[in-house]
Length: 387
Image 1 (cartoon, rainbow, N blue to C red):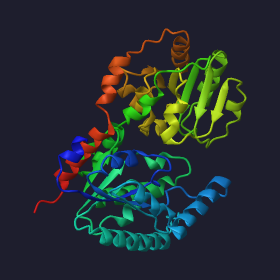
Image 2: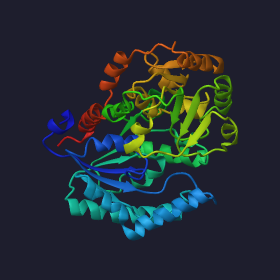
Image 3: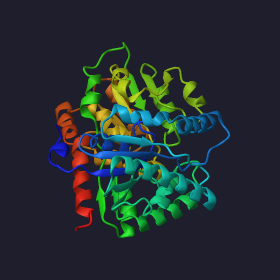
């Protein structure tokens, strides 16, 4: 049993606004999964910040959200994990309109109030994870509100930066405290003057250790898993593929950009997203992990979950010089430019890239989500009003 669950006799009550539980495990879901054994969590699923487009992906997602609401099937998740209650109020994505935001708030208040009443919540902590949640703060009967910030959303493609920035200013003004997942985000949010905790990403080390010991597929495998999106440096990936034709480059995850240039490379294989539960098994033949992000404002604002997940698999990692990679530089090979990235990967293919597996294992053991959950709970308790 973790220290979190043994050191707190009184269960905490949380109302958390986050991505759909279990669909694609997020930073916030990993954190609160660790808290379920000893705390009660109402998880509220709402629409995201991005405006829907007229494409198959967004139409399918909109239909899915409607089914979730009218069938109540998402609430069934609660029966799978004690301490968890999932609510899925009907909300609309067009948050640039005040009338839509008022409608969404009305739906959310009804759903959350009903769940809190059923569970006997008397003094809950509200945790929101996106600027679009600004309208709910102070309106759900919470005793403490926290903005748990995993990203700089205004920089993401498809967003309305001005609207997101205004919402974030409103949110940081209303909440009682802020938790940021990186020093970069923490520095940006420090101007709010609110109590701030920088809580870096954790990792489920035991889960990813299931990819060990490495299996051989007969070919050196260079692996990336995660969103295949605008953060990736396609020029770098093409150069890597052409310079190392003997290696197989596996790109695992949903494709959100035009993949033509990658598909043209005979040694690049695009693979569909793998469920989190079975991801380690699909990585058993990996020889090396890469983080080939472009060095721009968007990638520099990110704190990728996958960095520590890569390391927990017990293989070397080569990354471009994004802040999270530089922070882990004693354990990750950080490349300052395209040439040094390719050189480091080539060294790995030839068996010349150093990797201290024991040092990595010791570091990862200190970075578990159980330790992050304990730090989070301690921060929450320090911010709760004294009676």
